[in-house]
Image (tube, rainbow, N blue to C red):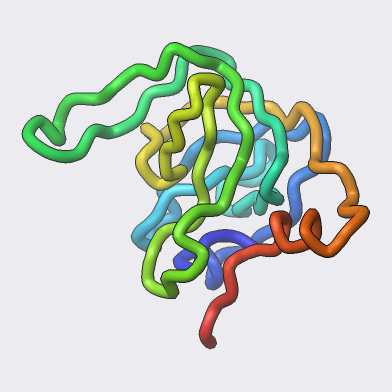
Length: 137
C-alpha cells in the first residue's frame, strides 16, 4: 500500500535494487515512481533503506515556502507517521540525524535506490511496526 492519495494510482511493491524517482502523481501527494513506468507508484514498506543519488532536497513550510532545503544526507529509512490520523500523509523518510520528512515534501525528480527491504517480522511488535496505516474506503 501507498499513502491514501495514491490508492487510485497503479502501483507495485518495492524490490531491492529498484531505481525510484520522486514524482507528483496529480493526486495531492508525491511518491516514488518506478523507473520502468513513471505512472506506476512504488509502495515501500516501513523499515526499507534507500540511497539517494545526491543530497535530498525538500520543500520548506512556514515563512519562506518557496525556498527548498537541502538535507545533508543521501541515505534514509522509510517510515510511516501519523498512523492514528486518517486524513494525513503517512509516508516519510528518517535521515541519519533523526530528522523525519514527509515523502510528499520532497522535490520532484530525485533519484533513489532501494538498498534493503525490512526483515520479516519475528514477533507481534515487529509486525505492528511494519503494518501500513489503515484506510477507510
